[in-house]
Image (cartoon, rainbow, N blue to C red):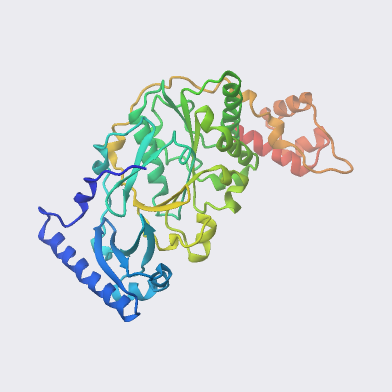
Length: 427
């Protein structure tokens, strides 16, 4: 993670600001006095000062007197919020200091427009400025770094997780050509990655059907094997999966495929970025432990925060949404404001014919029987041969119903229904 020391000047009450900005800055200084008085009334020896006026929050540093315990300030978060007239107060520790993070009044909150980060030169082709930290510095995430090689982006609807995923993709596409970087995009909602549908970096059209998703991820597994055997690591491949928990619930085998990508992909030049509303082990299973970094937006409630963050006292439920995020990586928690990407940025995404397509390989990666197998044991269970599946496929093409399959092949109705449903999904 690296910072840009000049970036914060764009968000403070520096010379050249408007009268309204100066007024807001004066209000923030007044609130600093209220926070100071609140701590003094609780016999906490401290000095409070405005540290940063950001797009959505004001941050105040708390310099504690000798021997004072930071836990005392953390326990007073509610009282500090009331004193400042704010909806909440998040007490954070950053760079050896205590920070009080207070939301601005709703009318004063502003987005961080992406053009503020556009001019920043990436230190490496795989580094992306995620946004601006509390304090005004750029927060860098380098996919080539073992701390950020695979990312889970979580948060409720409106938190900005899909926007953040698109910003990441946009930046790496601008910084790398198709010879250096390729994309595989999985989007069950069908519209989140539409802006990238014509990028020449795509290895395959944006994928939304369950069967096609399984095939694409199995291709990635086969590519991992090929790279392990040959030692080849380029081009880098980013596998980005939108709403991964929904996909896992529909096809449990996807979890093992993602876990394998996250386990050995970094060393072979393959990276996974997934989004989900609740990034806990219940929704992501065993694959979660192999993702070294989480980008966490607003969580629905305090009770869900620990499961989503995987650690205590993050205050994710107090985030404001609209790009207000936490980066949890390498044992550290960093709050930042993600940028708002508008049409001007998307128009700069390269367009062109796909350099290659997986269409010729995918049919061989998932057999029809994989989605139609009968998991039940016991009397009357019948294994189907390759010839049987060929005959079933021909019957389905001719319009056979589930009842037709049941009578013709001596299988149960539920199994026949799944065969019919799988065939329809495959198209």
